[in-house]
Amino acid sequence: MKKVALITGAGSGIGREAALTFARADFNTVVVDMSAERGEETVSMIRAAGGEAIFVHTDVSSAIAVENMVASAVETYGRIDCAFNNAGISTKDFVPIAEYSEEQWDRMLDINLKGVWLCLKYECRQMLKQGGGAIVNTSSIMGVVSRPTLSGYSASKFGVIGLTKSVAMDYAKEGIRVNAVCPGGINTPMTLDPAMSERLTNNTPMGRMGEAREIAETVLWLCSDKASFITGQALCVDGGYTVC
Image (tube, rainbow, N blue to C red; front, side, top):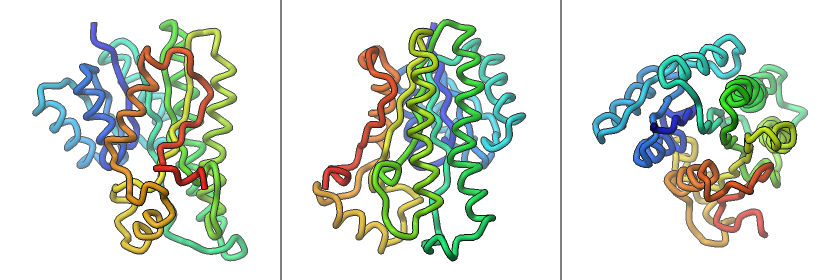
């Protein structure tokens, strides 16, 4: 029987590449995104390549939506073996905290941190019923180090690592592994700004941006039996950025 992978934020960038990567590895794939157009496009790409996938429209900051997301996956495929909690937003407002609005803070934390918390909550409930599973959360290099003007984004991504470690300890004996991936500068729609790309490239020892497939392959490995003794870790895939 095919395993089942659920990927949030799968309508573009790292999430889409992860959905395609899991599908190529013969997973039934649950594509989750806020954009129905982009999510359905990912499903079409998977099916065109001979894979099996469904789309579930979900706002990860809503408990009811996330509970329904998990229920839809289980109703269709019977279980969730792997989950990649990747949905998130980047910051467009590079300002110091004295100029950072409460509205900006709430939106950043609602999606990037509360969204991961809700996904973990309902995914773990399902995985406890079925006897285990593997989960990977998307943090960031800015969840390991930080820079000026990133208070909200950095707080959310540091929080994802804290959640990852805590939940990994909650269920280590129940067969649920929980890890995080911390991408560096990756060529995705989030990093199309030339100035940002140049800054990330210059600060990366390998001297280049990473590709979405390099994160997707790492997530697939973390979810596989090859990583069966790994839990509670935050793995930086960053070309050496956080070493400096």
